[in-house]
Image (tube, rainbow, N blue to C red):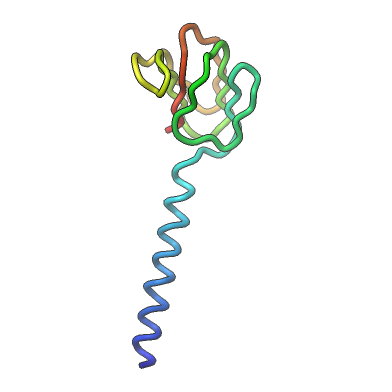
Length: 94
């Protein structure tokens, strides 16, 4: 019985660790400024008409020409990069 209890505890610990790692991988750490509006620890796709984007996160930001991160890639911003955008309608944090 003791062996089963230790096995269950090990499996539960591994599952908790896997879930905590997966949760942190989906969102960037830092701030993405879109037209001066901050998006803290952004993740996924953000739809907004963009004039300026400042990527102060630890991830790459890809700006798209259409809402919902569809259409052509307008530009890619590396961490720490800021750019005036013409025609950007959405951004995805990778």
